[in-house]
Length: 425
Ligand SMILES: Nc1nc2c(ncn2[C@@H]2O[C@H](COP(=O)(O)OP(=O)(O)O)[C@@H](O)[C@H]2O)c(=O)[nH]1
Ligand SMILES: [Mg+2]
Image (cartoon, rainbow, N blue to C red; front, side, top):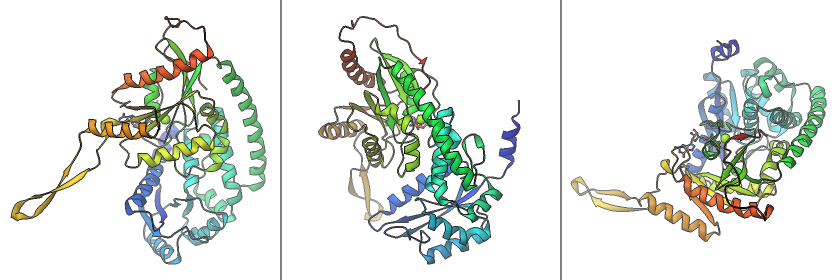
């Protein structure tokens, strides 16, 4: 069967974007590039093609137009010559910046978007359950409301697409009065849903709860699929999953609930965190956290930092945690030292000396143990490597908690292995 809608959307030409970021003095070239790559990844996730990016060295974005006037002129010249549908800024734009920038780009019919709108758009695309849909729509309107300008309204009406999609591909409203009512309505609706899911969580209160947390795209859903042998959606895109999913799993005869949660990212819109509060309750109420890290990512340590501080922010900063370094199969050891050898014509040639992976992993393990992280494992969820060691750590922590809840539980096959029982949350 051919889905007509799909035909229509693939028939539409791919939207194109120009990315803009500022880079403070202390930030290295590589870091700036990496941030731009992440922004481009967000853009790709939405099916939009990046045609160019611009950066400017500035301590902080210009309060009027984000970049200075010289750089702005460069951008204007570029978009006049190239087919560009939108320009996307790597930070949130203030209402004043939105107004000024729209004034400049209106005549070219170019949409002005920022990082938050982009992330909100992805969430809108991914939300499946009524709860997630309501949460996203609320976050979108709360973000849009103070920024709505006449120009933007006019432009979006004409162009639609990215930045304008609510959950379920429905176009968002742009009328301030309607939006205000809608926000009130969505808040009430969310309250009702939250009360229901709180009851549901209470009902499954008797089992130990383990939550997967981590930066987006590190392999949380893949790990969930491995541990729960459940069919969880995983994809090499940012925020493939925004709804939390709960499965009953057991480890060494002890049953527990495993939750896959939405990933974190730098500069996550605050309206999103606020409206996802109840989804994050799954994390807040967990007994044990599996902090999944993509060790193959060049800045995995910074990503861990983002996750840790978000956890503290939502009040889940000091739970028993297993640090799961994932994607060891892709891990490229950094060049440790360089030796100079004589090459042809006596030219010195640098030869990089790399430590074997095992030694590196051992080094990392030691360094995290030194930082008081008790449970550290290195796995490949995708290739099913070293999962037994993870299960061992998991079993220890789950058992501890389980016997706190059930001091009289007999540890002799009390429980049938019940993989994949579904508690869709
Ligand atoms: N090479 C490799 N890829 C992985 C591994 N684990 C997950 N992935 C891939 O990483 C991408 C993101 O995985 P996903 O589970 O959706 O990440 P999530 O956003 O944290 O839930 C997918 O393309 C996975 O196939 C791994 O151990 N090795
Ligand atoms: Mg996922």
